[in-house]
Amino acid sequence: MVDERSASTSEFKDHVVQIRRVTKVVKGGKNFSFSALVVVGDGRGRVGYGLGKAREVPLAISKGMEQAKRRMVSVPLQGHTIPHYVEGEFGSGHVILRPASKGTGVIAGGAVRAVMEVAGVQDVLTKCVGTNNPQNVVKAAFEGLRKLQSPESVARKRGKSLEEILG
Image (cartoon, rainbow, N blue to C red):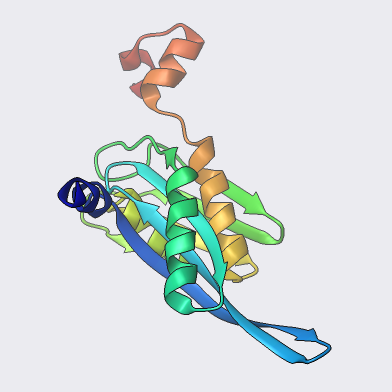
C-alpha cells in the first residue's frame, strides 16, 4: 500500500512559490507560524494551487500541497503552448498570457513561471501588470487559465468544423 501512495504522489510536480513567517501578537507575547503558497501539476494540463498554514514549514508545505491537489483545474493545451491569448485578474494582480512558437520557452516571472512549468506549458509569453504579490499573481494566472478554451470546444459552440475555426 505504501508503494501505491508514493506512485500516486510522484505523478505530480510541485513548486513552493512563497514561504512567509507570520506573527500573531497575543497577551503572552508573539505566536509565530508559517504560510506556504504551493503550486502542484501533472505536467499534462492539470494544475492547482494551495495555501497551507502551520507552526512549522514542512507541515505548511504539505497542507498547501493537499489543498492544491483538491483545487486542480484542467488547462487545454495546444502542443506545448496555450491555444489563445488570455488575461486573468485577481485583486490588483493582472496577468497576460500569450501563446508562443515552439522553442520560445517559458517567458515569465517567478510566480507565473511556477504555474506554467507544473501545468506542462513549455512555450508561453507572460506579463504581470500591477502588483507582483505572489498570491494575487498566482490567483490571476489561474483565472486566466480557467478562461482558456480548446479549439474543439469553440467549434462545437459555434456549430462549425474545426477547419473553419483554425483557418
